Length: 203
Image 1 (cartoon, rainbow, N blue to C red):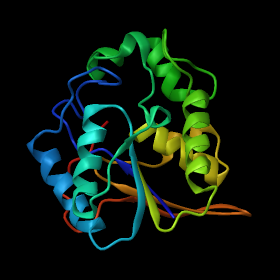
Image 2 (image 1 turned 90 degrees about the vertical axis):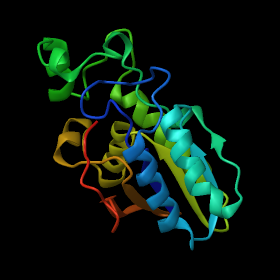
Image 3 (image 1 turned 30 degrees about the vertical axis):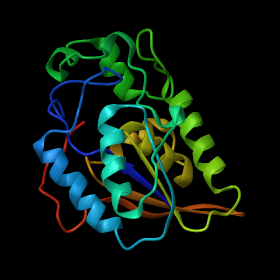
Image 4 (image 1 turned 120 degrees about the vertical axis):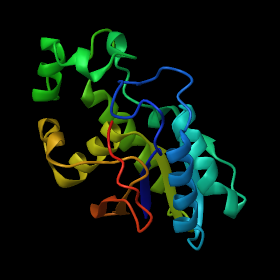
């Protein structure tokens, strides 16, 4: 079983396209969300915890790992999409950019300026998921990453095109669970925010 966890909230969630910009640490709300995730996973049997290189993902993963005494492995394949020149822009400013509107309307065709395609992000995420489950780990695997790459994995499992990513949400500190078997993968849980959810959403 693989649990895809979106990082908890940072100060720019919902306002700025943080992307791979450095220095986006968990905000107070995010630290509370990470503590709630740690409680959710405290009784689980975990084989490994991997995280995106971004600070917000590593801090979320470290909170989950602490009760288990497991070291967090940083995995480049779990990184946020490389948004290129859009990195650090406000969503209000992006709405005026026709390329941004095209990106959101046709993820299968568009590319972030000087950045990455959605297909490339999907490919590395799916590759990492299969790498982590190939040997049948003794316990669940937790992969802490970002909204759109997690949504891309869900699309791959459900056989959806990348243009369908707007049809569902992956909120901060949510858990999406995939069961990977030799005959294929199935979606077990989507965007589960748990009993301690504080209602905060955003990108």
